[in-house]
Length: 265
Image 1 (cartoon, rainbow, N blue to C red):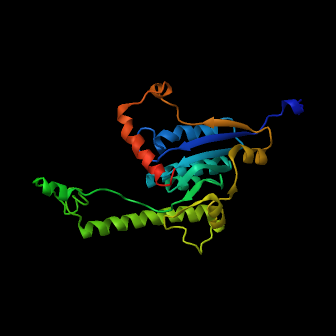
Image 2: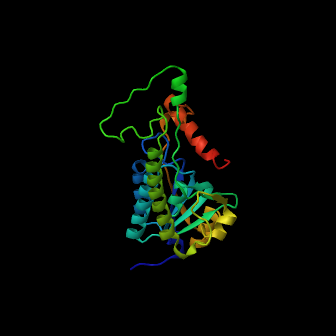
Image 3: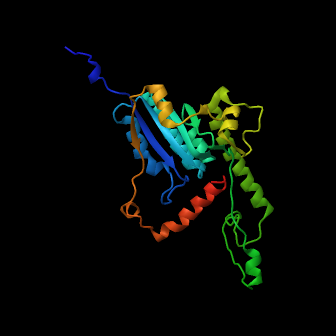
């Protein structure tokens, strides 16, 4: 015989996954499907959570890794029939917004930056510098496009055209993801997909988010005051726990700082 005693009833559990940083494969400290897969799988499967919350603070990065992470979240959400809520801290831009779009709803602070639905490729050209130094660049290939966008050669119009075509296709995939996930919430008469970004209030008007709200407050509103938050995230290395910095990680930290700086952060 089972008695349903009030003091024995379990509080709802919500798994919280922190997604903070740039998105890239094979880079120390960045978000990637490889590093996040065990964390995401555990969050959805351990303890039968009532929901999963994504705590996002990312300026974006790799379109492929963004897609892989978002698809993993959606697959598990659909398989387990678990709702997913996204909460934005400083920024969910570019790939960061791709991650947010995997949720059933998106909430942000009033000062959060949202959007940048676009694709970018940046590089440098050093052919003039080489010429001034009297250095001759010698490149031999099998395949006429093998040296496409070589930074030590003068930029070729056909290379730029080819790159722009690839970026355009990636952009279309990003747009399709946002439209599929946000459905009829988007204000499609506006230029949502130009790479522009907005504060949360304007993003709400455009249908990119569902409201202004903070994680703990909103989850208590949705699941009750006694909701229990189960937090999941990447473990810090032993060195970083003691405040030590690894020299090889310095460049990656600078690159990540530059990505956040693009949004005034």
